[in-house]
Length: 183
Image (cartoon, rainbow, N blue to C red; front, side):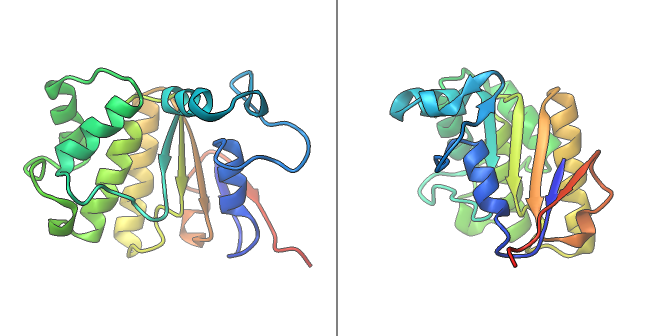
């Protein structure tokens, strides 16, 4: 699903609420049968680590770690065992093979974005959430990133939620929700 709307309409807030990064002022958010308001601290982190793969607008890669190290850290934090063969396959699938020992400062914007996507997928979550994954990309690379997210979500049998203001995403996902800025 794509959640599309102009800047400032609440798309990122919506995603952060669904991911349990923010708490709602009222009501409840239920994700995969779990009321997120019942979880606190480490329990919420564990839930997120098991069930949600997040691709943030800012990639937040660990600068001191290479690509492989960033992926291994994500797997460790999710308490997920990932073999070197699985990491190699994920890197190949995302066009990162040969870059595993590069640090983020050595990567292009598109490569860093693919590392951020790989990090979100390394623990095979049932839900993938991406915040503005095409915002810094040209038309061809934007289409490739959406296709890549769709393919990897389908291969993992995962749900995919993309929040964006990018009108190029319209029609590329199974369904859309349009948010509007408050009047």
